[in-house]
Image 1: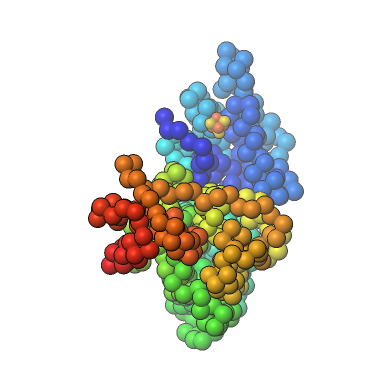
Image 2: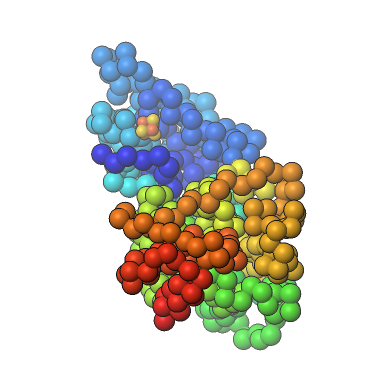
Length: 508
Ligand code: SF4
């Protein structure tokens, strides 16, 4: 048992639903208790799709347990095929149905439905949503690609894009951006999957020269299998950020046998971040948390393209822990691999960031701590499925990223005014950045960081006043460090001098 209030990922059958909902002609029969239809709302409300996801739930109730839930499942399959006439039927169980051990795959084999059935084995008590999505995509591709050899004379510039899904973070616009970039380069994009693909499209995957994996969480396993089974190489650099997009294009050109093209930067991030107005961004401490792909990409942009200092990096995806650890080592921080939001909150408090880049969970944490925050990864609220064009990938994605990361920060001039005139009725510590929601209620007070138990710290009036000059987002830490320092040296009460001695001590 684990006490959980927030979870970063849903159960694996939600991942399977995401694949079914991404594709055309696929229907998913989910053996699940009454009430599991809540998952529909993820698609119809958060993603705001205009139709129900292609999922039939068996919705068994307590009284069904006295009879045959296996029959309930088989009837649901027959009815779904008759009504929706899919090209492929996915069958699987949710967490509760897994305990019944009805074996949807075995039951589906005994049916005489006239469509290919792809059974899913998703261990709900060990695995989570992204794993479920990756496994479902892999099973579908294996079912439809077959083992026959690839056609001869495949043009070198043909490729597939693998990984974008329904409910993926900005997948819709990332696909548009990357397809446009590749087409400009002279690439022929054959199949994008699973988003928008049919089972027949999956069967055509081996007809391209190589694959491009945009979201490893979803498509890494499939791309590796296509490489082993059909000798298809794949590009795994994720084009989020200007440098990464350049590197991605270089890799694609090399695989496609296209000539090298230099100096084609089409982003505004590079100039914007070099302009004098961005000087005050230099060395801002940033804490990054999210899925592995977006967290690693964000750390690279923050450090190499915006001049921030990465003071924390982590992911909730244990499957990609090694990649995140390798990335964290580059920035001299220890990776946080955890799906416990309380651990993430403790790490954020300890790292004292001036900006948090994370999921909707970190947005809540940052709000409580009064630290600016931008969302870079799923899970997200409905705001992160915007109506406007908002990719994260490619050059336009870099423009979007520059705007959305800088926006929550206090603007340079205001930051200076705050330091100089902290008693101003409008520009004071308690006020949020004035370009953000002027009518919004005052933010909650920052958590008070007190000295550890046993430390009784008294501050002189002057020392307290001096402490108030420390910017509000690091003041708690400064207080705590000073009290620890004073305790170690047996200093009582804490004076202005102690404050500066402690600062010098911890700066060493
Ligand atoms: S079966 Fe799983 S997803 Fe459905 S209500 Fe129970 S725990 Fe939640």
